Image 1: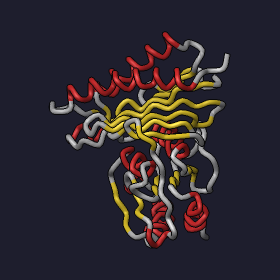
Image 2: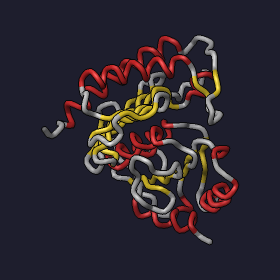
Image 3: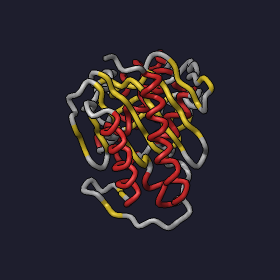
Length: 259
C-alpha cells in the first residue's frame, strides 16, 4: 500500500515532539560530553532520543528502514527509510547555544522525500515535501531570487570539516559571494528555505545531516546537490551545495570543480 505523506508527516511531528520536550527540559543543565570515533561530540541525550524515536518507528512501521546518526542502519534497502539526527548541533547543545535541533527525513527509493527540521529553543519547525511545498511554523516557506553570486549571502556549517583540497575549492566560492556566515548548523538550511540567505556550501556532513534539509529546500523552490551538481540520495558524500535560486547552482559547481 502506498504510504500517505500527510500521515507520515503527522507521525514525524510526533517523533519531533519527543526530542523537543527532552531538549527543552535539559537545555539549561550542564552536559557531560564524550567524543566519538570521528571526533564529533555525543551526549547521553543523543542516544536516549534516537532510541525513543527508533522504538516508535519500529512499532508503527516495522517494514520501514531506519538510518540514525547514533545507532546506524536497519533495513536500509527498504523503499521507505527514516533518517534521524536526534541532536543536530550537539556542540551547540553542550555549549548552550540555542541553534541545536532535530532532523527527521523520510526517503523513498533512496531519495529525499519528506523533511522536518525542529529547533526547540527558537520555536521554529520547517517541514517539506521535495518538489512540492515547504512550511515554517505552518506558513509557506519560499526561497528567494539571487541575481548573481556577487550579491549572495552564503552559510557554511564548519570549515574545519573540510579537507585541504576542499578548503581550496570552497575558498573560490567564498571569494565570489558578498558574505559568509559560519556555525548556524541546520538552522542555516531553514533560513535558506525561508528566503533569508542564498546558498550553503558544506563538506564533511553525514547522510543524517542532509536528507531533511534537502527535501525542505526543494519543496521551498531551491535545490540541494553534491559538489558536482548531482542529486543527493542515501550514501551521497558530505559535500553539499544548497541554493535558493536554482539558476546559481551551475555557477557554484563551476567554481568548485575548476581545475
